[in-house]
Image (cartoon, rainbow, N blue to C red; front, side):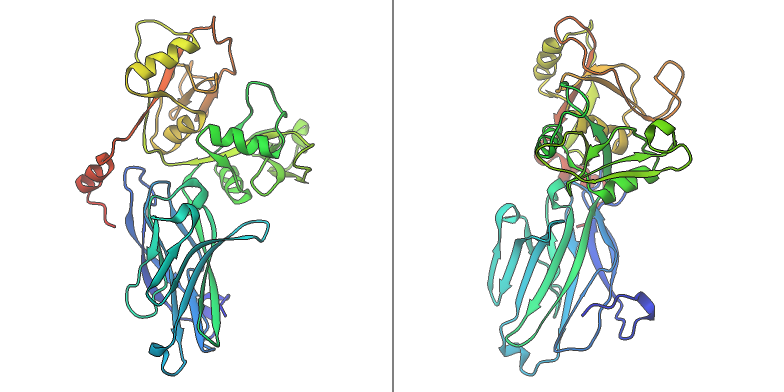
Amino acid sequence: MLCSRSFTCPGFLLLAIHATASLRSAQHVGTKQSVHVSGDESGAIVVQTAPGKVLTHRGASITLPCRYHSEAENREQQKIRIKWTKESDSLQSTDVFVALGKVRKAFGVYKGRVRLQEDGEGDASLHMQDVTLQDYGRYQCEVIDKLHDDKGIVRLNLEGVVFPYHPRLGQKMLNFNDAKAVCARQDAMLASYEQLHRAWEQGLDWCEAGWLADGSVQYPISNPQLKCGRSDHSGIRNYGYQHKEDQRYNAFCFTSNLKGKVYFLKTFRKLNYGEAVKACKKKGATIAKVGQLYAAWKLQLLDHCRPGWLSDGSVRYPIVNPRPKCGGSKPGVRSLGFPDRRHRLYGVYCFRKKEEGEGQRDRERSGAAF
C-alpha cells in the first residue's frame, strides 16, 4: 500500500532518486532532479513511487521512480515480476514494460526506448528515452512474487503550451476524433484538463468551447464577461462530456519542446501560400505548423512582429515582448485567420529539424547530465 499523508503518515520512507529531466531549458535534454518517494512498510512486498509529478519535455530522457522492498524469506530464489503499464482516463491500461528474472520485454511504441534503471537492490525505476507527447500521463509500477504484490503510481508531466485551435472550415466544426486529428496535424495532441487548468493559471483566456483529451468540452476564462458565461467569475467553464461523434466544438491542443528551430524566412518580397511552401523547402526546411510556432514562442521565446504563413494556411506571428503596432498589449501568438492562399501575400515561418547528433553536441557544450 502507498502512504497518502506525506510526512504525517506512519512508516514514511524518504528516498532520493535521481530522475533525468529537463525542467526549464528547452536546450537541455536532461538534468539531474531529486525525487522523493513514500510508502508503507507493512506487507511482504512494499512499492514506493514518487508522490508528486515527474516533469520533463518532449525529446528528453527521464526516469520514473519506483523502488520495492520484500520481507519474504529466500527472496533471491524467487522470481520477482516487475510490470509497468500506462493508465488512461477511461481506466484502460497499456502495457509498457515487463521484467521477470533476466527476461525483459518492452511493448508497442515503447520498444527500444525503455529499460529498468536497476540502480541497486529493489530498484524497479523505468528509464525512458526520447519522450513523446503521447508519453504524458499516469504510469503504474507493479511488483509481484508468487504470493504477494504491490503497486504505485507515477505521474509524468510535460512542460509545454496549450493553444486553442479551429481549422479553416470554421469555428465549432470538429467532433472529438476530428479534434484529435487536427491537433496531431499541428504537431500537438488534445490537451488534458490538468494542462488546460495550468494554462488558465498562466493567463489563458478563450471564450470558445473546445474538446479535451478525456472527451469533455471546456474553456478557460481569465477576464470574465457576460457573453462568456458569467461576468463576475473567472475559471474554467465546463460543458461536461459530450457525444464524441455528433457534437462539434473547437479543440484545445498541447505541444512541448521542439526538435529543431522555427524562424521567419527573409525574402525579397511577400509570398502567397504556394510560394511560401516552396521557399522553406528551398532552404532545406518545411513550412512551420501551428503547434511548432506556439512551442517556439513559449519555450524558445521567438518574438517577431511580421505575419507569416503556416502549414494549415493560417497567418500568425509570435510576440513575447508586446509593443505598439504588434497586435495588442499582452504576449501571445497573433492570428490573422485564413486569408486567400493564392492572392494574399505575407512572409513565412519555416521549421528546420535538428540534425542527428546536433542535440548531443549542444548537451556536451552545456554540460547536461544523463
